[in-house]
Structure formats: C-alpha cells, structure tokens
Length: 364
Image 1 (cartoon, rainbow, N blue to C red):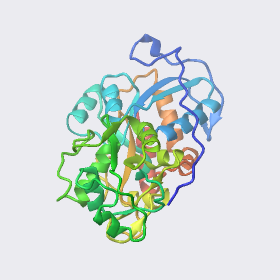
Image 2 (image 1 turned 90 degrees about the vertical axis):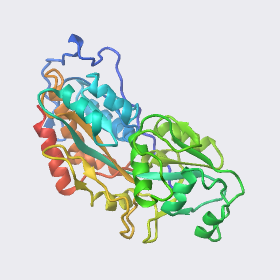
Image 3 (image 1 turned 120 degrees about the horizontal axis):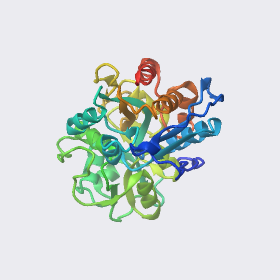
C-alpha cells in the first residue's frame, strides 16, 4: 500500500561559531534567559551530539522548536549513524549520542570509562517501525513472511517472480527482474535491530552474525537512512530496510509483514503495539529494552526499533549539563513526544515514559 508523503522536516540547525570538543571554547553562555518552552525555563549554551540517522527527522523537529523558543541555545546534532555516534560519545566529542541499539560489550565498558564518576545510561526517546520498502512498478501491495525477508536479504531469493513470493502474493504483478537489495553501509543500529528480527524469526535461514555492521553477502550498501531512501527511489526493482519516517518522506511503498497472525502494514500505530510490550533489561536509570520480534499479536508490526539518547548518569561537563537536561526534558515531555506521531515515529508512553523522565532528571 502506497504511503502518503509527509512534509520533509527542516534541516538540522548548525552554527560554526562554537563547537563542543571538550576544550575551553565549550563553555556555555552565562547570559540570563527568561523565555520558556513547554512550561520549562530555556537553557543557554551550545550542545553537540551525533549518532542515529533513524531519529534525524525527530531531532530536526525538536531542535527547530527548542531553538525557536530559546534563542540563546545552539544544538548541533549530526546524523552520522549509531556506531559513529557512540564512538564520538566515548571520545568525549559530544554531550550525548543517539543510538538505535543499547550499549553493550566494549562500547558499554568504554562509555562507562568516559563518564568516570557514573555509568553511561540508555534513555529511550524515539520509537519507530523499520519498513521493508521497495521500488517495483505496478506492485501496490507486497506481503512478506520472516522467511521470505531473510531469503531476499541473504541472496537466496534473487528474482521478484520467485515462486515463493508469488505464492504469498496471489494476483500481484511481479516482474521477472532481478532484486536489487539495499542495506546500510556503515555501522547502524537500524541494521542491528533488523538483523535481530531476522535472527529471532527465521534462524534457519538467517545464519549471519548480527550487530551494527551488515555481514550477509551481496547487495549494495548506502549510508544513512537518507542514503537508503535515495537509493531506493532511484533504483528500479530494489528493496531495502529503512526507518518508517524516511519511507514516508521519500514516498516509498512498504511491505506488509506476516509473523503468523496475518499481514500487518508498517505504520506508527501498528509498531506501537509491539514497542508497548518491550521490557526493561537495564538496571536503575539504564533503560535498555528487550523487544519481542517474534510477536504474533494481531495488527502488531514486528520489525521495530527504539532510539536511545546515551548520556552519562553523572560526571557530565558542567558547561553543558543544564542545556543537556533542558533539551532532553523537552524531548521527553508531552510537547516533544507529541511531535513524533506526525512524522512517522512512535512516542514513548506509559510507565516507560515516566522512567525516561526520571532518568533525564537524574543526570548530573
């Protein structure tokens, strides 16, 4: 089913006068500011962050709103990918990182070391569907099972009119063309979540190593959610995985996924049904989540992600702490979360949102 185009969000605001790099020039403005945003006092200074491209549209909207209300604040978010964002954070280049995967392994160890006086914590801020988008002339609806998705992205199915795809889509017009498979070229939390879905739901087919880097053979890589969207738009007979907001802004057609309880369209509302059942696996204010990718709940779209803002529980730079807390308080507030639904994302809700707000409040 063809999704309607939504208005592209304003590009991220970046100023070159100040850059956060851990040196003396990072000091925030001491100017008194009396304006407010969503009922809280505006904070001043310059804040630098990087990471997830999946949340780039959300960040653009939040930054525009915050800077419009708070004229003494400059927030620079670079959508470089989750892997690069975590690396920047560990190297003290940024105040926080955006990542579609919670910290783990050596990244967690190194991030904790960067924070020194307290652990680095994962704060869920944006939910979303990972759409399996395609560009096939005349194909207005495509239904895929986990096995079919795994076989397409592993190169085991190479033609659009493969008998298995035909059987799952009776009456559909499927060309004999070769499938052009697209995936992320850089370390990506979207890749991590997409491959976790395939590992969970089609383990006999998807036998490749998971993680942020794409390890399956074949296909063509593209950088960032925007890069995948552009490649899909310009490549006939292509298919790729992409955060739903970018599928919408690129007017891409997306597959319906059948986990066993019927085919489900990739929409924010349907993704919310899966995300709402996620459980917290972190401790304290670390709100890393466990997602049930195998869900067979009717109308629950199963291929989802949650983007975390990664920050130090304590030991944050005193020159940026007020703006860090102020901005994340805004993004996790009612006004900030309300902006997500209009651009293809899933707001955080319920008890989890209460815990998110508590985690942000605890930053020191």
